[in-house]
Amino acid sequence: MAFDQVSLFFICVLPGTPSLGLVPAYHFHIIEPGDADAGHINFRVGDTPHILQCAGHIGYEVTEPFRGHHYAYQACQAIAPFIRTFYDDVTITCNPDNIPSMRTIERLGAIFLDEVPVPQSDPHYLSGARIKRRYRWKP
Image 1 (tube, rainbow, N blue to C red):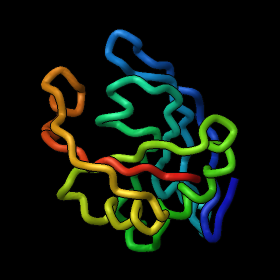
Image 2 (image 1 turned 135 degrees about the vertical axis):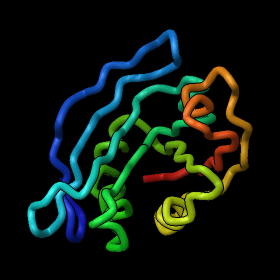
Image 3 (image 1 turned 180 degrees about the horizontal axis):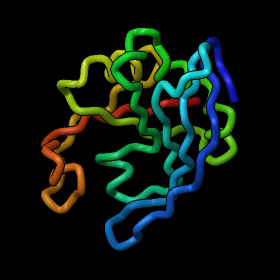
Image 4 (image 1 turned 180 degrees about the vertical axis):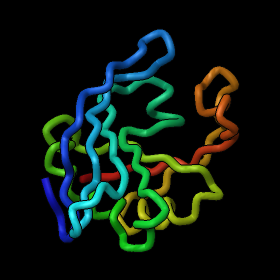
């Protein structure tokens, strides 16, 4: 899978942990034009409260040396045809203070839904998140 300057390299399917509301996820490395590993993108398959309220179906991270090139946006576009084999639309979330992620999500054309509190029982709460912005994206 590829879009514009990036290609995705499949690594594995990460198993879920149903007792924690964690679902299986397809894990890919984001490869930039110089063939370097620029980060990763995960596509989570499942509709648990953890996914729909906190984690979202898509998670990505671009490592610092590669930020500023819209690689997260391109990775989302690259994975979009694969996502469509599972869902017509998906939830994407970010923390309210993560402006680059918010811009990526909005560049995708995702629709802002709301901001929700992170439940104390959610793994994101344990890592410091208290509020999540939720968006709906039709890949």
